[in-house]
Structure formats: structure tokens, C-alpha cells
Image 1 (cartoon, each protein chain N blue to C red):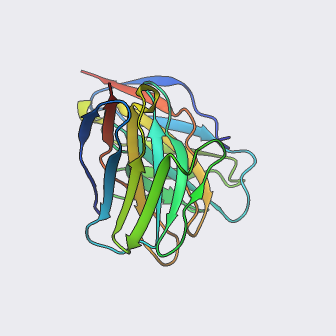
Image 2: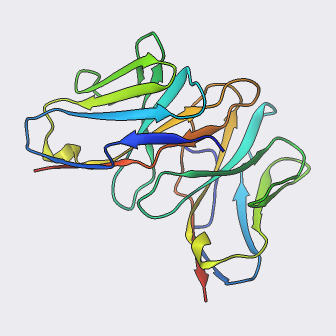
Length: 110
Length: 116
């Protein structure tokens, strides 16, 4: 079973920041937080990952709480093309598989 | 990011035939690849771990004789659905990881299989 809890769905206005929460209260010290998204009928797309520190790349920012029990993915300026199912996954490093939960369905509205 | 391709993107076959799906890492080598299956409106389900040069590791409930996996090189893994039946119709997705340090998995675009 997935080790994360995410809201089933969220809406966001186009151009606004989308903040997607994720709870991972049982995360271990050697587990990373990964975020992927899946646009309809496509393979999942890697977004970002982190261990303890906040991370930022060209797609998004990842904010991890100090106790590491939750995190937030931030899409700074959501566009219609960001409409997708977003998955938060915790995973140890190395060649271990990703275990997908149900994710959050984000709808960006014009 | 790294690119993973799958072929074919979609296939329709008759019940009882076998279908081979290829997964390639285009710009990196992957000693481990993963195969997933996704039914409509459901999340991805891990089927098996494909290891280059050795036997695949299957998840509980996945028949290894039905879903044959071959990982013959560092850039290619194949999944063969043998004697396909309508209940095998699904979206099959592979992933491959870049090696070294904290590995990130990159996914292929998926293969939609319809068994008539």
C-alpha cells in the first residue's frame, strides 16, 4: 500500500499557484519524497524529489516540513496543461520501484 | 530529463495470441526497469521488476508464465503477454532509472492493449 495520503481532487484558477499537499507521517529517515504527474492516457512524468531540504526546479517547488511528515508541491503559475493526476510517493534511494497511491486530480480552470 | 520509449503505442489483437511490448531507455543505461499496468480510472499497479541479465521479479498475483519479461541489454526490456485474453486489456507502462546516487525513475508513454 502507498504510504502517503493526498486529497482526491483540487481545483486551481489558471495563473494562480497550485499547492498540492501530501501527508507521509510514517516516512523513514532514508526515504525520499517524489512527485510525479500523469496527464490523461500518458505515462507518468517526473516532477521533483527531495529528502529534507526544500527543492525547486523549472517545473515546481517542493516544501518538506521539518519533521518530514508532510510536504507540499507548488506549481507557481498553473496553466491548463497542468491539469493531471499528481502522485506523491515516498521511496528509498536505489533501484526500488515506485508504489503509486490514488493521487490528487488537479483541475486548472480558465 | 531522461527519455524512455515504448513500442507499440497501441495494439489490438485477437484472444489467444501473444503480444510483445518493448521498452527502451534512449539516452541512458538502465540495469533495472519496471513494468506497470493501469486499468481505467485506477492507479498504476507494479507488475514486475526487470533486471538486466537475470530473471525478472514478479509481484504477488502476477503470473510469470503469462507475462514474460526479458531484459537482454542495458537499454531494452520486453514484456510479452502470452495467450492474451480480454481481461488482459489494459494500459501497460514501463519505467527505467538513471543509475548512481538517488535514482530517478522515468516512464515510457505507455502501450494500450485491447484484446478482442
